Image (cartoon, rainbow, N blue to C red; front, side):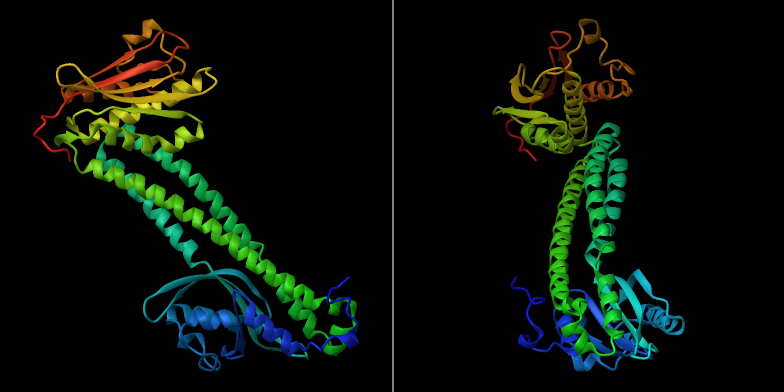
Length: 427
């Protein structure tokens, strides 16, 4: 086999401990640092130099955290290191908040261990830190988004829309939680402990050169370091992919929140509205639920005039109708779940929004009761959605009606609203 381990010692150039450490500090992606008893830097990785930004290795060595960070971070870090020197006990995977003199804040997960000489005396500390600033920023953005969802829902005053929004946001949050768990697991399974054990093993060798060239275990050290470096790169790539997915999901939540806020600011205002745009917005509110339940959406948007109505109320009705259609498809027996959305002109300067499904259908005896307060056929329904939607339609001088051929035949809901005069521009 053509591997470094199998090459005879006489045919391989000597590999010193200094060369191994230098190679490791040059390539390791995480921040690695060695300090003396007074917490002064005595060796740092190239990644650490980049992290400090602008400083050279010579400008870092001999200095302490107090020279680079604010006291709010430097002081606890110094106390941790002095405690390690006194007790010999390592600190593993500690989340640290780093505040810089310019006010910038970064986050790292750090492991710090005692640094010993050949006589096993503690002469300082060494540590490995992984930058998790982006993950913490995403966590903060997620918390902010959650608050925005609650605030936006309260502003809108539309219980049905808020329920739909929060349900869809909750589905996205589930994906965020999965990604966060993957990132956390990746950090916890970091191979940093292997480096610690390797460093301890090398320090224990009285004749390091002989160990690395003659001892079977020592001859595997270079290959182990190569494997470890490859693992670190792969792990970094995988975690970056998860973080990219996190960011995309947060952007999706922000889009939903922004949309609801836009509607909430126009409560009580009657204005000309684009029917197709209203239906697209209502679809976005239900997009995750429709996709998760594998419901096919068919659009049939014909050219129609704008409608006169309140944005928030129209959205409330359409979101409720689309969600109910999704539930009906789930309870039906059709091999393919289909919801059809149509916009068409109606009689007497009216515009029709039509939401049809091929779901469970509505018995004839329920067609006259379905808009009644508290009436519902769903096990966990409350019967307020269609009742409030019918009321909202009447308040905008419109109407909401339903037709169905019976059980298993699907249902069609039709919202009619007044058309805006041709001279009035659409907002």
